[in-house]
Length: 270
Image (tube, rainbow, N blue to C red; front, side):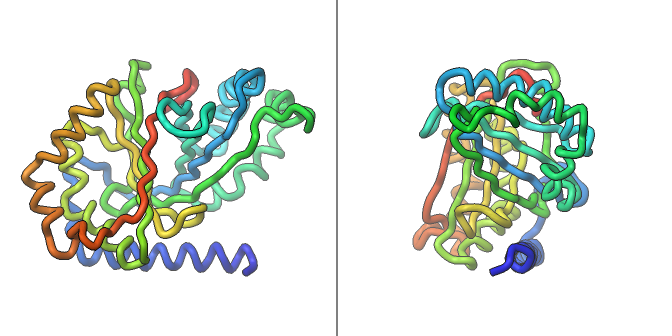
């Protein structure tokens, strides 16, 4: 399938999915942001221990993030993998209200003379010693009930914090729709009550695992993360929601969960 047709089909399918879930479910998140839904490019940089990691740090801080901000992309999240497979790895979260801005970002960066000069050590690294092993990218669209990225207060103060990034893969498209509905029926608020601060909740448009959704939660530390998940599981509203016949976990609406913990890099704006 041609890339243009594939992108169009993926976006249409996701729009129908979200439109259906929004119509069937109340958007109950009183704690969530409002406005038009954002798009996110979530990138994973698989690295190797050694000089490539330091080179990538300098590239993010001194070249890439400032240039992305000039394109109107931001705040940009930059994270290192704390708990999860295949370390070292970095993650970038690129938000924009305009889809075209995200999908043309690399082309526009190549036209930015300031960026190209600052990025030269990374972009022009010899093929025998690349700064990364591979880059993977997933294009996401924010849930209608949580349409904007929320920057934790700790980020603005540069305080210590961690992030829980989770991806739910569903066995069928309808199971995916039901799981999205479940968030809109109260799951946002249950997380907030438990002390899990939502950063974003989004539906995957293009990526390696479809149909799927991804969300990110923020915590002061690992201990707070563990306490919040205990509170979430014990919450009467969660017990009621998960017992609803439409959302019951048997048969499951989610067939696979990827769960990792990230730490912000010093250059992160999230």
